[in-house]
Image (cartoon, rainbow, N blue to C red; front, top):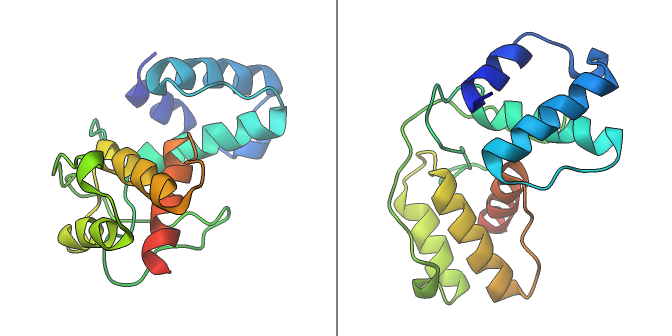
Length: 154
């Protein structure tokens, strides 16, 4: 099962009403698609499914995430995820080695001028932020997006 099939299976459903067995199966599929480690606890599995859906529901085959790259940070929603409009990824091909300071990272985010960043760029930015701040970057793409948003907003 691919990303698009998972999204279609979840579209219009209440995540709280999905059976535990189905949540586990969806987590297996999401892990295959994203490479993310499958959580052990059912609450974390449900969160993984919801994060995946929120990250990719409007992307229609694009491998992108939508952090707030400019303007006001996006946030809110039931789990603190913004509802960013679908748009093509910036695809700037950021290089983590070139992001050595907080100013370099902020400049790279601002360069997108408010457009959603590609998933690969979000991953590179999260790793660079973690290195600069001496923190560990989150693994799920949705959490990386929030990590980058929070850094940019601060």
